[in-house]
Length: 141
Ligand SMILES: Nc1ncnc2c1ncn2[C@@H]1O[C@H](COP(=O)(O)OP(=O)(O)O)[C@@H](O)[C@H]1O
Image (cartoon, rainbow, N blue to C red; front, side, top):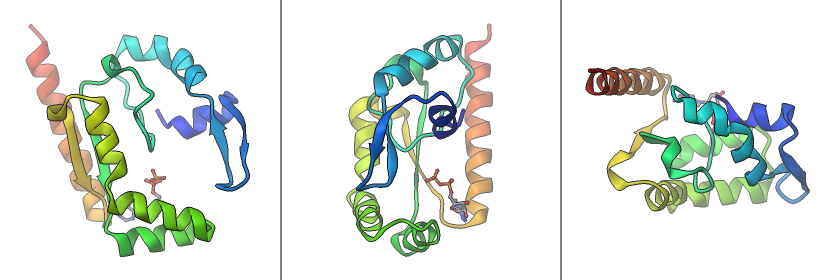
């Protein structure tokens, strides 16, 4: 589930942030909106933050990381303004999202995955698939 798409089509935002040039997320509405689907299970949620999601929603959390030079080029290509670009890079340097994940979920379910090169994408998918298979095995009896 790609959360940004749902947010935009479902209009689950509350105003627009002129400084960061993005919609302001209405976190409570997002959680309400996703609750039924999430409690059914079998859902992968892709988003850049996680502290407002209920802990019970997830069995595992992956935090993707990129080296700064790689990330800089990526965000520059996306046309981020100077301030937004700087803050995103700083966020990566201080591992803000990894820390947020550690603070929001049990440490043993939070994993970091490098995402610098296309090959990393493939490796990460394989690793996540392996984890899913193992989880299904462990929980089917
Ligand atoms: N592992 C990777 N290797 C090479 N390019 C990547 C990789 N991950 C992302 N990218 C590049 O960055 C862009 C944005 O990736 P995306 O996963 O959508 O980022 P985010 O989820 O942080 O918004 C992609 O279109 C691609 O060009």
